[in-house]
Length: 216
Image (cartoon, rainbow, N blue to C red; front, side):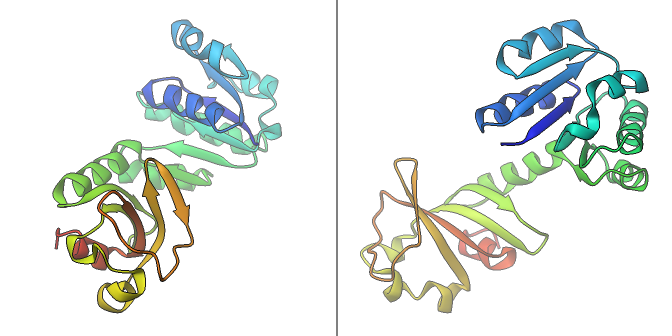
């Protein structure tokens, strides 16, 4: 369990707060919009109405006590910069800021952001891959070169064991789990026989994964 501060309760900040709570974290959520705070207040550990551009507000929150501080301000990049800078000045341990463009990413890193995320860009990438592939259900890019895919078991593998399909040799990917009825079984054994009811969780070089899913 981690102690997390979420600054900015637009759509992304709100959904992030709820998911962090669902995963067992302690979440303090803050926004200057009263309605936005009231919408999440029943579902988070603590909430507050306040303008985090005011350094005194950040001091009162004790930002150095949180494991992670998320800056989710989306409609005012200047505010996002100021809040990110102030968090680091006040000793915040790890600051993750949201950006919409690459130029914003550079500025946020320069003033101290430990990590910068691009929610809309990342969702667009996942959606593009999912609907371009013939058999992909989900996609996570780990680095520009490596990715994890959830795919339907290819017809050519049905009825074969993992060993017989020679997946690593022929396709240069690794099966890291098998998903059946929303339950993932890790550590797939070589003698496992593929069935059409399963989804496979595979990992490897993105270029090999895209080829396997029929995109390239």
